[in-house]
Length: 301
Ligand SMILES: [Zn+2]
Image 1 (spheres, protein in one colour):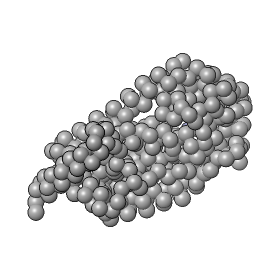
Image 2 (cartoon, protein in one colour):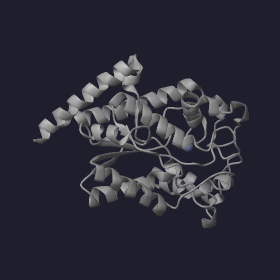
Image 3 (tube, helix red, strand yellow):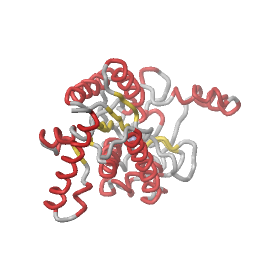
Image 4 (tube, helix red, strand yellow):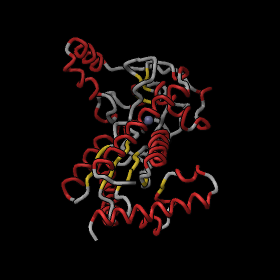
């Protein structure tokens, strides 16, 4: 059977199963239910693979997010977004790795962290299994800035060692549209709190949200001033932050912030509307990316 014929047959199976799903559920909402690997049976996955070889792997963290947001914030953001993208683009979502690389947050209770090489290996072996089953387009969706380096390495490894194509589905680790447009609103601040008010409002404790005291070391202040004079040097300032306490750079969370929040703003300024705008924009760009990738290969599903 030619590749095209196989895809068409796959689409037909998918279409027919869609009708049954629709009839079985009795309403159209379930027709766009997200496709979550752990909620599917092996026969569901086999059927999915006859129509598509795409998969999203969300990556998150379990780390302190100030006194007002849950430790799972980044995992909730990555998973919730993956579900929204799946509903719209019909792409399967594989399980999220619940801990990320977060050692610099471990001065606050409850933070978990995997070594970058451990996390890379877990993600790579997950990808290997997915590839064994027939997935060929692997899209990582990262909800935590500290994972970016791991994500890049695992993507490189998949692209250079297997027949699959791996990409990052945008950079979702930080809020971009959150006013006030303060240059320092990096973690559990207005941006991230707004996103959580939209996605998981029952897990947000706005009564505990507070503006933190931020403490930069003399070295940080020096590079910040130099970076303002010479913008090409600004990266040096940023490389001092999010560093483990043992490095002596003063960039661990508990050294930098009184509450674990990294922001010059008050997270109380967060609103559901800001978060909604931010997430909808990112989901739309991811859906557009996936649909375009499907269209250029003339896939019907
Ligand atoms: Zn976060």
